[in-house]
Length: 206
Image 1: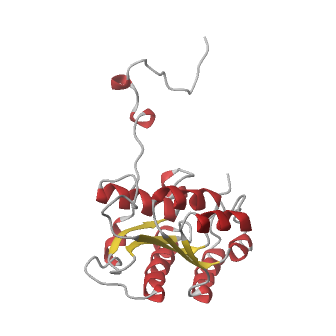
Image 2: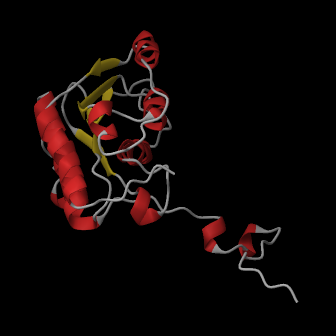
Image 3: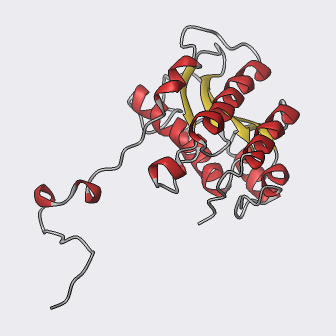
């Protein structure tokens, strides 16, 4: 007799275990305490401090990755969506803060792109320079502006692997019309990373 821990997979999705046909993507419930959907976030610093508060609370409350992101209407400063890193809690390597924010923004607006005709200009504000995955997703998401706090070098000090991101990567985004703003509230952003280090947070590089 051969025993296996692998689940039996049927040819029909109706009889598949839920894990084979469903992925849950959600922010933790406490995010609602921090996101003000009626406020106009008027400056890069205000927008970044929201992303930082999300990142900080993600460490303190869930012990999860020290990264947070938010999507705004660029001109009005209205908040569209937020995301925090859910890699470890949801066992999903794709759920970086930026990715969660992109997914929830597109779901809210009912569009696979945040740059659809008739839409206002959107931007992503993230507590740390994006990794290779999130930088690629920035292009496909439809945002026209990228703002980050801590740098790639700050993240690698904690041994996070940001992947193949090169100066040419940013040149390409800029030629595609995406404005890039670096180092907003960098010291505050670095402090969130150091908080994660001080709490012996897990480094999940795969």
